[in-house]
Image 1 (cartoon, one colour):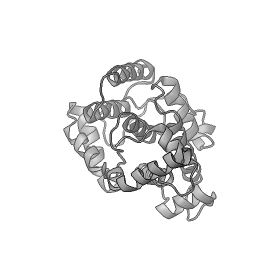
Image 2: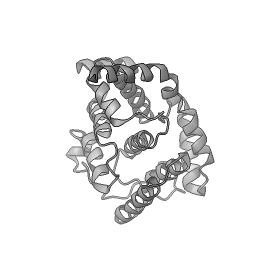
Image 3: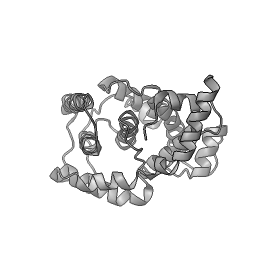
Image 4: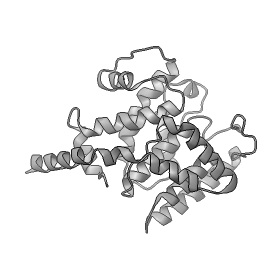
Length: 247
């Protein structure tokens, strides 16, 4: 089910609408994969009242707060072509005020090689390789977008983006934000990687990076596409309500 930019931006103006439920659902799962200690209730408190409940690291609080803004910015930039600059802007917004910001890593591509702990066989891009590799990946995606995009293309892009690992930190979150943008722009049901599939997701991701076999990653994506399907009645009624408001 396609969720148009105008529909989502319209719902953003409506308190307690589907927009905010969608934002919490996506961010809860994506942040949890990176070790965030915010549960749904705490995330809702932060989003609705700007109140921090529970015990969290300062970086977790700041980055979780920032992720709410990145989600909004993703929606605002739907249909804007992917570019190096746009991806850097997403990262700058995500990491603003964190310890990475203080280290000078805000919105810039990595300056130092990074490795995946325990996965030495996966060779991530060297700093000098990031820009040409990422530019090639983006150009390939934008060219295919002119015709049609499906889960095969999304799995290829996601796997290779994470293998390029363009930033010093925050690559997983940014990669999933890009996946959100790509799903919404291409009439593909939202992929929110559920925490319960964390190991399967990472195993499938690493397999695709090692062997260029994307089948298991595509299957994980399919397993994580149920949220919007389960909310079709709410989406339909919300859309009708927005139409009536405009009359």
